[in-house]
Amino acid sequence: MFLGIDLGTSSVKALLLDEGQRILADATRPLTVARPHPGWSEQDPEAWWQALLGVAGELRAARPRDWAAVRGIGLSGQMHGAVALDAAGAVLRPCILWNDTRAAAECRAMEAAVPELHAIAGNLAMPGFTAPKLLWLQRHETEVFARTRHVLLPKAWLGYRLAGEMVEEMSDASGTLWLDVARRDWSEALLAATGLSRAAMPRLVEGSAPAGRMRPALAVEWGFDQPPVLAGGAGDNAAGAVGLGAIRPGDAFISLGTSGVVFATTDHYRPWPQGAVHSFCHALPGTWHQMAVTLSAAASLAWWAGVARESEAALLAGLTAVQAPSPVFFLPYLSGERTPHNDGAVRGAFAGLAQESDRAAMTQAVLEGVAFSLRDGLDALAASGTALREATVIGGGSRSRLWVGVLAAALGIPLHRLAAGELGGAFGAARLARLAVTGEAAEAVCTTPERLETIAPDPGLAAAYAERLPRWRALYPALSSLEVKP
Image (cartoon, rainbow, N blue to C red; front, side, top):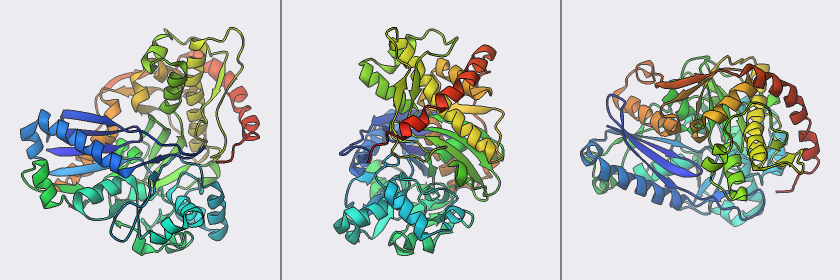
């Protein structure tokens, strides 16, 4: 038996996977995000731990014998967060999350201090990445920075609580701006630019490699027959790729989670910072991937549901079909944007509102705005030389056949829906746990899950979106001129 854990932004999910790769049980606990100032986004790591205890207890109660037989644990997690620890390993402040935009000035300072940053890290310096956050702490919370002895990413902090060791793997480390992505090792120059050294960093392993074992006392407390092996794990999107079997060059998927991602696996390091494309290590040795990211995908629909005082399901139910573009535009820059703009200060907007604009038109505009933003990402990948001809869709938004149809038309490629599209991160983490325990070949374990259906672009809607896309893109410069100061 293998346990997969996914530490997301809105929830902690976990599942039990048997040797036949059947999901025996899964559980979820919600998380909340604190926003103490405009542009800030934080969570208390202790809330992650309490949520993990909740899902673990639920799975143990549901399948006690299977739970006791767990041999390996894999962790997937939200990327880029900064958990600052003191010399004793205690958390010094709430974790600054991936969609926090306060560190824009620090990004500029890093790029000026290390001109070769793009070549080493394979990415632009973006406020959401981890390194600029530490430079912000150095400048604005000097006492916290002075006491900081270790920095962990969110899932690595959970691993530290489970196994007592500070260990990180390559895919998540790639999102820090401290990793030499081609060499798969920490960069002394990038660490020095934020006042840190290798001593502050966790030990690096591959995602499919053993990273340690659960602390024996905790294993007894949790009811395991023996302390399970802890795998290196993966950042959320790389874990999703492992869960989908997207481990070969050319494999691709699109995530409609809190954020939106266009993901493509590559067999070599392929940076494209001029298009704000991420170039990261994959969770498997000798493999890399590219990502284009929009910061508010399903988060945009959740925000609109809150404003409209209606459930997301009810809003989607109000759209029986999408046969023509909404007369309303929506720009999904609620937390800034990454690909292709790298603009943490821009904010979203509805445009084209009229007296007749109703809830349905605005809901459809939200779906289309996210789809157009992902089209920006698709085109950025194409400019780097990575052209996608089809992709699988995962994440909470993939539950909506309507939204996937809108997305297929906006992207102009067929999209595949899966039977278990929402459990990709936890499922991939469980697969990595199996690889760490058994040493099997990744190709034998990371197969493609069952597809529900393939949704091809509707020709008429695709043509209408192609005509509308330039008008949608023309709105960004106007919004950019109204940027807020985080």
